[in-house]
Image 1 (cartoon, rainbow, N blue to C red):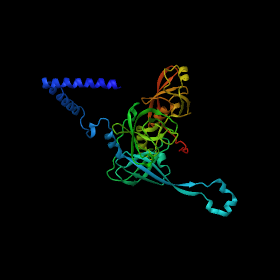
Image 2 (spheres, helix red, strand yellow):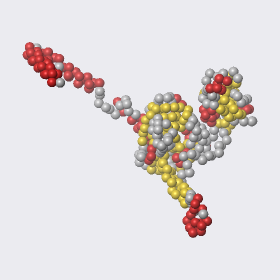
Image 3 (cartoon, rainbow, N blue to C red):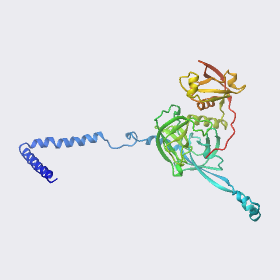
Image 4 (cartoon, one colour):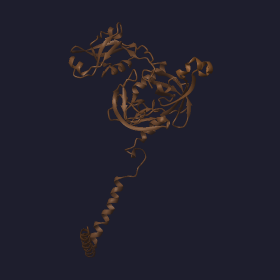
Length: 390
């Protein structure tokens, strides 16, 4: 180590001596080779890295999208009376003899929270049905600090959507985006009130489309890894331009918190439900009277199909719209009103979107040939309301 240091010291001494000789004989060399180059580097850096500016100057920021969407996203607080059942042990006649009516079921005030999206200057708010289910009181908190009472206009348990309304001047509203043209990898932002901490924005991408996790009757979920937690339900999923593309509804979790698998109802579905509830107070859906099943790889091979896309008709209701149109069990439904059928869930969603009482063109495959049929769309019967798992 000492030898290395000595060598370095001797080399440095020689270098300093050479620089002194050069500076004495040719002073202009140093002035032209060091100082101007230092000056050029400074100018170059200033030109390449301009100071941060608000708005479009920050290319890595979604501030404009957030500023556009946030005012229309609200926090929802609900309350209702819930019966608290006594322990079965207290049903013993001896205990009842001594304690009497004090052993009767008690009621308790239950509080809930969620999120919602103002979709009209008239005060209409889209949220999840499970957020406001059986609530006695609903309070909406706006991003500008206003707190307002809301009323339920209508709800749709089959999609888990509800429409509320508030009455106030100068209400903001969100712009609907094109959810049907979302692509895997598109950037999305989730806005809501997770755990009641206040309005929060998280970012992710579209992780999957057409998901059917089995929680609603009609499912065509957008899957995202944007963090969604309890309290986000009913909040907005927006695209990079701040337009509404989904209503955040559910998460897959083993802990109750976000694991990066969240599900949102497409804005196109939510808009149809909104318009129907506002116009009629309920949701009317198309219906053709068929049962369908998934096309597995084995069935695709058996039917000599190029893919597993489509829905295999397993049953046809007697005297229903499909039977009247000539549809038979064994037919494969591949297109409804110009939109491709991916699977039975897709078929159910597309049929539901048809207008009852009007004709619709269906494309199907029978044996080895494709054919088109026209069906007179019926009205979907109301499904029995089952208790929702929470």
